[in-house]
Length: 117
Image (cartoon, rainbow, N blue to C red; front, side):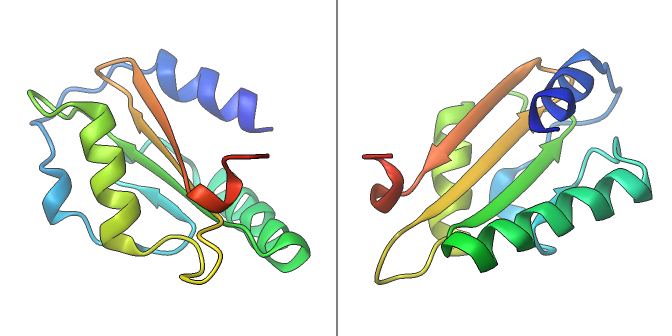
């Protein structure tokens, strides 16, 4: 399901202004700032992320933006991961998937607690 999600989103070409990652506010597990997910897909992904957290303790955030403009995706993902506090503080088992659809860039930011995995 995640692979399908990635391929759909990376294939999209949206026309919009660059997003400043510092202004983004979390909206739960699924943060579709690019507006590319239909409500059913968004709900399915949110249910999946919730099930993963209940089963493993790992917190996930899926984020789409149209474009980051001149912002580096690695820096934007790292900033969002830390600013949003993804993953429990004591275990740092968090995961953030950032997709910039128009830029055709993606970044998976993983907390230190998941690095060995």
